[in-house]
Length: 60
Image (cartoon, rainbow, N blue to C red; front, side):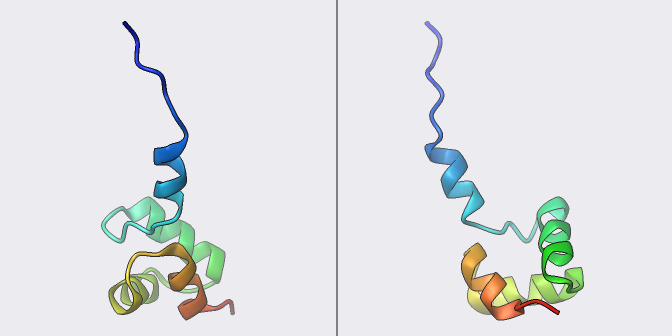
């Protein structure tokens, strides 16, 4: 029997920034106009909530 896929996991995943995954750090760096190191520092400072990270970084 096949499992039914839900969107629950996707929404939760989008709400977080995984600082150990290069593609996610790169995406946030491009989106905010900051460096990868600045994104990683923001995640370390405020946690992995995408909203909090984007608020901390602002946009250039």
